Length: 481
Image 1 (cartoon, rainbow, N blue to C red):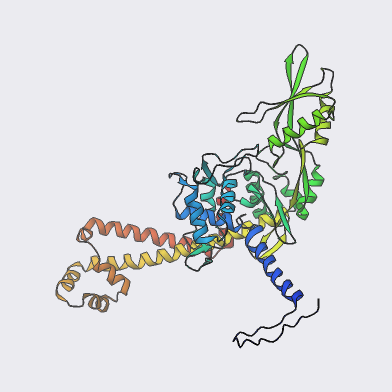
Image 2: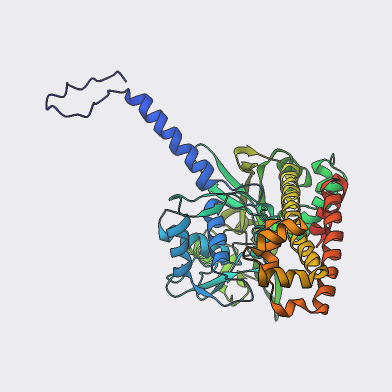
């Protein structure tokens, strides 16, 4: 597109209009939009498995103290805090993200404990946010563990009035355990849920054998583990290729069994359906095919589901082969579906990258090591501050009579004590703030005991920070828990 020049401004205005090429302007602006969508909306971080909206929900719930052992709060309150402080987008999109975190048929390990109507596998919507309540689950607290101990970086919020974590400490392998999906500009992600125990076993093996191939890790993680169940019918070679390349897919079939109805009759009962399939839509589709006479071997279908799925399929006659009947249903309906695998994530929180199963686990373990080192340094700093105060207390106890005299008689007792016993400013301030009851002999014994305990802990932390082997041993213990 050629350049179009605007006529000169003859109205005497002070603003100068600069003509630009439309193609270049659109490319530049669309690139900015694409990067924003990729980095801040659609792709999860490999370290904690969360997109920004989910991370902000978790952070807001932590600030509201919605711990698993505490009471619930209205979802409207949670959404309001998230939108007002951290996420400048629509309230409905935030609520939809929160609802999904609470759905047991969507999340293998829910991060939100919901109270009220949070939707169902039939596809019914959740109740309005003014009616529902929520709090965090134990898994969510694992993701947040250490966030107050300088485990991760914080950044200013959109209005720079507050701070938010750039990533969560992530003691739980959330990306692979709960999976993720999203569509950005020019790229997408689709990761199925897995069994957390299997992931931890694979991570432990990877710590001990860093060069282990994906094929060996598959001895522990044989495939996805969907919250709605189902049977993966792909070969091991096909699954291995998908895990090695980070791209592929899994064919998932419903779990079914033959149930005797007496007098030589039987029916098929479906107890598990593929992940992401809405049960009501599935039954409606089968009924439509039945009415259109495209399922000649099927007589009727009934939904007898309560808390668990139970779809009853009645054959045309007792002579029908159940295997052939199910094969026809697998071919024509979502009783068999394909879940795509595209492990496109933000590697190290910065660069979109398609990772293998090993790559995802390795980046999670590297993140856990960084969190361990940062928390250890934070704890070391806290110990050193406390030891400084305790050392000042011990000096005060050894010279208690002189300390009392200085406080009573001197105009500047703080400066006098600092000069007399070479105390630091913090030590002198702490001594001046001591209560009279702290002067008893028993308190001195307790202080010496605390001093010795913290000194020993300090040596342990210094040894940990100086040894890679000790760090990985600690991570192994944490993962095993």
